[in-house]
Amino acid sequence: MADLSTIYAGLKLKNPIIAGSSGLTGTVESIKKIAENGAGAIVLKSIFEEEITNEYEKVLESAGASYYEMEYLDYFDYKIKSDNINKYLKLITEAKAAVSIPVIASINCVSSHEWTYFAKKIEEAGADAIELNIFITASDITKTSDDIENMYFEIIDKITQKVSIPVTLKLSSHFTDLTNFIKIISETKIKGLVLFNKFFSPDIDIEKRKIVSGPVFSSPEDISKSLRWVAISSNNVSCSLAASTGIHDGEGVIKQILAGADAVQIVSTIYKNGAEIIPEMIKDLEEFMKRYNYSKISDFKGEMSNKNLKEVHLYERMQFMRYFSDKDIL
Ligand SMILES: Cc1cc2nc3c(=O)[nH]c(=O)nc-3n(C[C@H](O)[C@H](O)[C@H](O)COP(=O)(O)O)c2cc1C
Image (tube, rainbow, N blue to C red):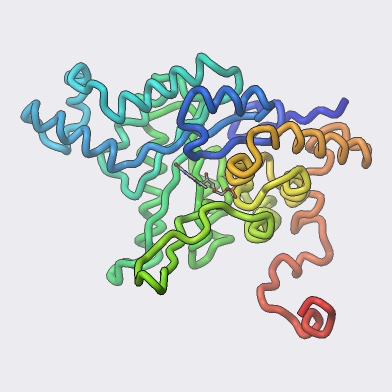
């Protein structure tokens, strides 16, 4: 039997399939179902920075303290009752009690303000790691790309000072110099990078002249962006890599490991096919490994990354070539 285990962000996973952060990992019942179907780990639904700061602000106000005295909260914890923060900490504790796979907490954040105090609470509640989902929209004309990138470093610095569990970062692909940024951010104290997040995509209903949501779920074709950057980055990074977006089946998992991923995160496929898709993915992975005599993940991890290929330029090519338009594709 092939050994499917992998190390991601210092955590030993029994297989590389992680259920990514979403509503599906927001209740203990659903988390249990995902674990029973064989996932290697789960990332909890995110708590948002605003949820944390709003509630802390309320408590601090009633205590007569200022927003900038978060450490003060140690004395006022008892005042935080059935709020979002406590609900989130309870979710961590209950999820940890319910499943034996690693449970990774998730925080959506945009600043390194005092909310970072909360990271310690997450660790104390028993989370095995923290995934930061940072996205700073480059919409402020006064901010340079350096200013924006520095905010990532500040947040990582603050959080990693506060906790000793592994901290990982889920990134978008919207950076001026993506390859270099991925490399230098992997050299910080983070232990894992997730490439990439998928965002809400606005659309317009022309009849109602209203902004509506575009497709919420990814499709298997969406795999190519993360595949490209995992392949380009996997030999340049100093931390683990998890691929995310567009991984819908066993083939997607295999492709990402060939490109150099240590693990994959899946969400849309669980929404569409149920948690029962996980054992199917595992079976496909096992059969592939058997077919090509791979006994462990590292036997083929990165085989199709930029280090090992002569056609590495194919990952770097963005424009369609005449070659393609002459053939039957277009
Ligand atoms: C309904 C839904 C809810 C999500 N909620 C979160 C969330 O709370 N935090 C987060 O970091 N990502 C969230 N995501 C993004 C997913 O974790 C994942 O990065 C994205 O869906 C791409 O993976 P996929 O192609 O497997 O769906 C959500 C995605 C979906 C579809």
